[in-house]
Structures are given as structure tokens and as C-alpha cells.
Length: 79
Image (cartoon, rainbow, N blue to C red; front, side, top):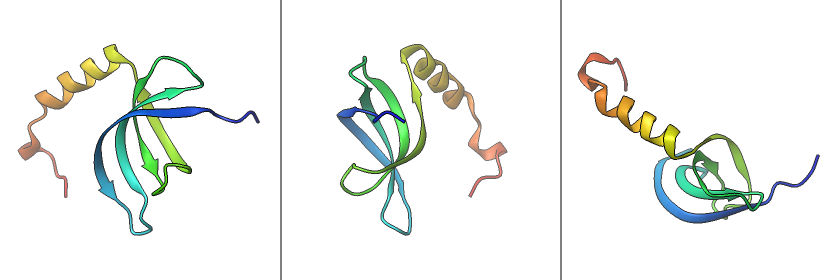
């Protein structure tokens, strides 16, 4: 399997931290020298190892923002 090249262009925020110190983050990341995308995944403290995640282009991010803004949190059973 080929190595995956990445560069975190901008750290946007930490969503949570796990018990082993890994953080679920939202960042702007360029994968394999391509145009950066919004990326949500867990990272180790040095940003060397990563977990599975999702990437979103601008259109997908705008659609997600629209959906999130329409959610009534009082209707959901979230902790």
C-alpha cells in the first residue's frame, strides 16, 4: 500500500479528546498534494498517526452546515 501524504493547512478545532490522548479534530487538510478539504478524524498528539475519518469539499460542507443548523437538539436523545 502506498504511503499517504498529508499536510494540515489549518487546525480549526478540537471536538473531543479520548482517554488515550488522541483528539477528534476538524482541520483543513491537503491529501497527496491535492486541494485542501475539511477533515474530521482522530489524531495522536504529534499528528503522525490518525484514525479513520471523513473529508468534505466545499459543497458537502455547506450542505452539512445547512443540516446541522436545522436540527432541534431538544428533540434528540443525545448525551
